Image (cartoon, rainbow, N blue to C red; front, top):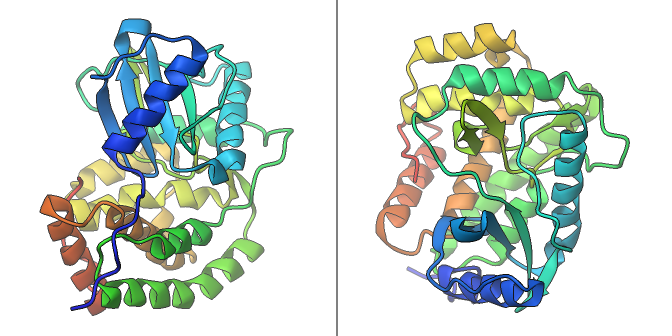
Length: 299
C-alpha cells in the first residue's frame, strides 16, 4: 500500500520548542518540562507555576484565526460569559514559524462536566447578541482539505476517500448554510471544551467560533450517542436543558456527515501509529460502509 511521506507537521517536540521560544520572547520563565495538555490543531502546554497555558498554533498562516480567538475571548468577558481569558502579554508571538498565545491557567478538577452543563452553556452562548466585529461564516471544509493536503504517513487510498467524501458533502452543506438563519456558534461544542473554575463551568476553545446555524453546536452531543456510547437518557437531559432536539431538524443529516468527516480528518493528523492509527482505521471502515452506529472511541 502506498503512503504519503511524513512531513514536519505539528508534534510535541517542535511545539515545545516554539512554546519555549515564545516564553523567552515574552520574558516568561522557561519551563522545558511543561505538561502537554493536548495536541491537535494546536498544542497546549500547562505552565501552572506562572498560572498560564501556552497555546501553539500550527503555523503563522493561522494568524486570522488566532486573532479571532483573542477577540472572541475578550468580547465574551465583556458580557460576563463564563470563559477563559488571554493573559496581558502582548500576543500572539511568532516563534519558530508558529504562533503562540498565552491564556489563564485553570486547573482541571473532577468530575467531568455533564451534558446538562454543556447544554446550559450553549443556551447562554446562543442567547448573546451577535458580536459587533466580523466573524467568518461557518465553513469546516477548508481546514479539512488543508489536513488532507498536509497529510503525514497515511494510506493514499484513505486520503483519496476522504477527499472525495468532502467533495460529495460540501454542496449539501453550503446549500443548507445559505438557507439557514446564522448566528454566533462555538463551533466545537463538546464536554472536553469545558473546564471547572471552582464551582463555575467555563466554555473554552474559541478557534472554531463562527456565524452559522446554532444546530451545529448541538450535533456533537447526539453523535456521542451513536458513536461514543452516550446513554440516550443523557441526551434527553441535554435536549430538555437546551430546548431543542437537533435530530428533528431537517438539516441534521448534512451537519452530522460534515461533523464526522471533520472528526476523522482531525484524528488523521496523528494517526501514524498506536491507538490513533487503530481508531482511524475503525472510523474509515465505518465511513466507507455508511455505518452510522459503529462505535468510535474518544482519544
